[in-house]
Amino acid sequence: MDPRIGLAALIRARRLELERAAAARDAYGAEFNERKLRSDPSRLVEIVEGPTAITAWLTELMAGAEHEVLCFDTPPYLTADAGALQFEEDLLARGV
Image (tube, rainbow, N blue to C red; front, side, top):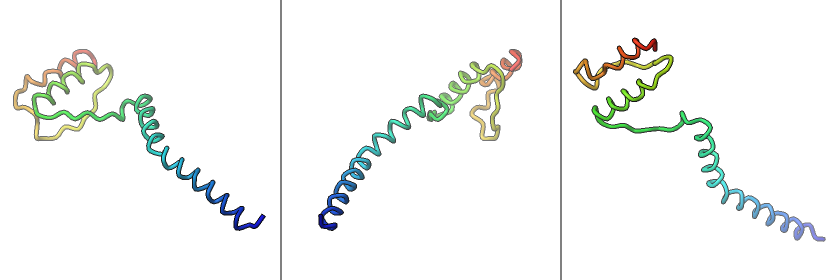
């Protein structure tokens, strides 16, 4: 067989394989991300906006703490009301 014909057929076959792989890339990427999120939920991102919503979310998060809470603490603070973030004293009372 003329090498030009045989090689042209091989090149077409490889191109088709590459096109199929490229077409599946997004689907495989989406499946990878979905499985990664199921196995590592910490990769999820939640957006909480506004002082009231942030305080409620933070209070709920702290209420679920069992061992330790680590955070960065820098102004501006959410609220000037010292009682609004009472959960810190509650955590200490529970030994967290």
